Image (cartoon, rainbow, N blue to C red; front, side, top):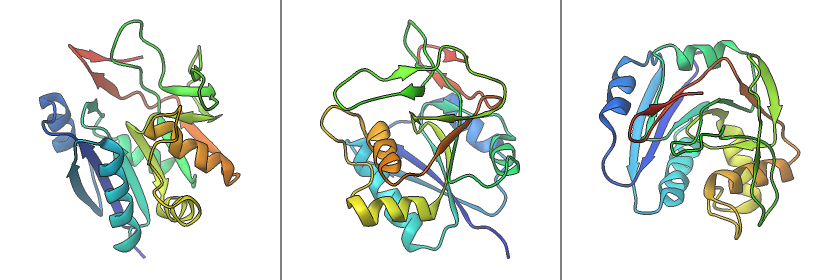
Length: 191
């Protein structure tokens, strides 16, 4: 049976040219690409989550509209094995650069990024959603328990709000530190 994958891209209005180029080059076997616009990114994520659950997708590759992926990113994430949540390691897009992969975070406190990103798969407390492959069942479980999975919790953005809910379900999250997407700011930032 062929796995059905949704490439889900929430955006506000415009997307970056570097992002478009990387999406065109991305190898996407058995994938459907859906871009959802909203002035609230968490609203677009929630709509995409609903589409993923209702249309029978097995996995979702979340990609932010300011990311630059290597053409083999999806294939590499899939080849890593079966993880409910597996992200690539990327940095913020403003100075000082810091990984958007977190060792720990708490509601109302600044998240603690990993200081060093290992070149292997490692467990994380949470991450940004710029490049995350997850099982649709995880989205369904979070939505079934918490309703709108990406709606922000006071003191957390939508990305870490989702991760917080995942942690509440006892599901482990992982990062493949060998996968290093770029993050478009005034130029493409890479770790």
